[in-house]
Image (cartoon, rainbow, N blue to C red; front, side, top):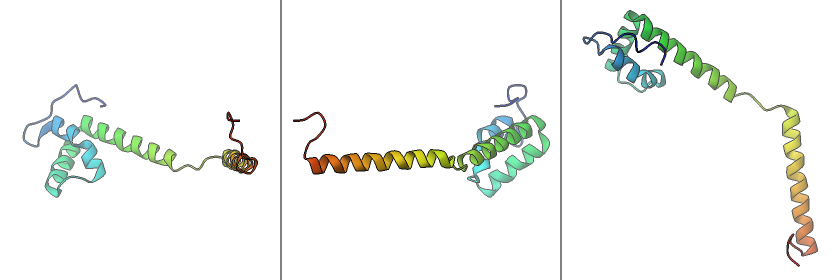
Length: 103
């Protein structure tokens, strides 16, 4: 992760290791309210961990945005045409009674 080797954090709030270890759970909303408050308090006080959090949150946002993009209509058209062609070829093989590679 970004910048996590330069410091170790304080032991009172679980420190940087705890914050970084739980960062993904924090981003996913999978922590208890108590743990979430502890991580938030650490992020409020620790700039390197906050930077790591910001990086991971931004990365997730970018990845999620790209996963929602629709494929170009030309690609959808080509795939649909290929499927139609394959269906027609399979129907022709059934009607003709022959299977490719067999006599």
